[in-house]
Image 1 (cartoon, rainbow, N blue to C red):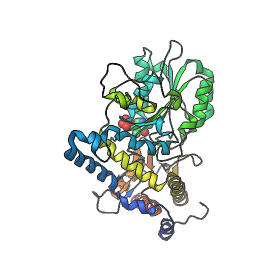
Image 2 (cartoon, rainbow, N blue to C red):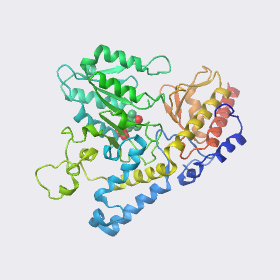
Image 3 (tube, helix red, strand yellow):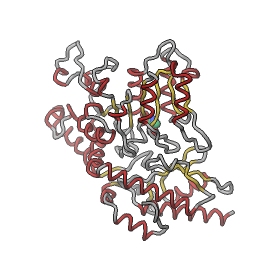
Image 4 (tube, helix red, strand yellow):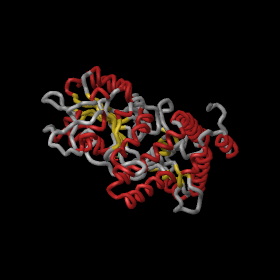
Length: 428
Ligand SMILES: *Cc1c(COP(=O)(O)O)cnc(C)c1O
């Protein structure tokens, strides 16, 4: 598959012509505000592009609100009463869960807190939360504040799974040692599926297994994993998992997030209750007694914000239509092509710190040539209408998304990068 890549536009175009999901690209809106160059958008790891279907579904609910008003709860095409269930099949498919184990609700950090309220059960001796060394700040803040609310000192209560080397790779053996040494004092592992900075895919099955062996609860943050890599939540069975939907899922800024609670916790009394977590058939009796819904719906507290859920529903439909297996197959090749071009064209200048044997769409590029100002390279790429993102101190993240990116995008990225480096060496 990767043996015969070529550094030419004609080659990239040939791969696009053979791509079975290439038609989806036309159904997305590429940014148009910069007009000098065609857009090369490689930032689906941060904010996915808008699909035409997302706009259509939002407009449909605005129309329904106008036309049905309160009766939209029962009489519109997708009644609001059960609107969140429209997300269940797509979420289940993408996370390897049962439809009863997933729920669309709230936003990511809020869900992390809700899930920790249920599954972080600190005791006097076992109260620590493990995060990884370069944890996304929101996750670390969430963990630290849970520890603090439980009456412990976050400096002592938040433990780090340390990364190794300059590339910041995480090794499962190090987590194992941490658990052997401190396991009796640890209440929760709060870990990502894909590390946001390096793009490393963690062995989520092994993490869950280690948690079980040591009697430690496991929560997974799948922000960078859903819609990107294969997930198998039902079999891995963490105590909970949460994700946002605006990255690879393209549901729009701040769109409604998702959560997984395994079947074994389906009738848990650890949920925080609200009326939308009450069984649908008795909800409108408005009784003082709470009658729990079954499955992950129990965790839903409020009636869902339809306008920010509509693009999630649209997005999941596109994923189901394209088929995740086909997308993943293309993604493996897209990112391999990207990294092949980097290795072939910019050896000694730029390297990918993303482990080649465990990655999704994303490649985290590091400028290693001391004669080059990494930030200036990034800024110049932006001016040439390449969208990736900059992460301090020196990483440029690029992530070709298989639903709307092409091999030509990847080729274009490498040629514009070549042009930038050429300009800089001339200036020097
Ligand atoms: C994107 C991301 C977030 C963002 O949190 P929000 O609550 O959606 O703003 C949190 N954690 C991780 C790991 C992320 O990648």
